[in-house]
Image (cartoon, rainbow, N blue to C red):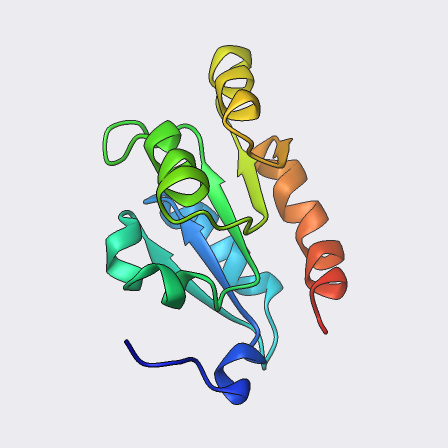
Length: 127
């Protein structure tokens, strides 16, 4: 396994798990260099756990149940990979949010609120 370099660790990258083209566009519109977003529907597309660890946080679409199971995503992150990467969820109903909360997802927003709060999160994780 290759070790991450300091330069790679300092990259400002986030993960967006959704297929919603409008949400993808809105998130991308909020980002300015050096920030980058990686859009996936499968955590394995990011590589091994040590690659996932290089991202600053994950935006997770709770309405995207046809392509991936949000509960599986959080379980893989927290139990299998044992990574405490911040997970900001958007969409979904109260039931899925409660299940995600029990599985240790961090915050929950509507789609609109997620876009409004994203600049704040980018400032917080701009170390």
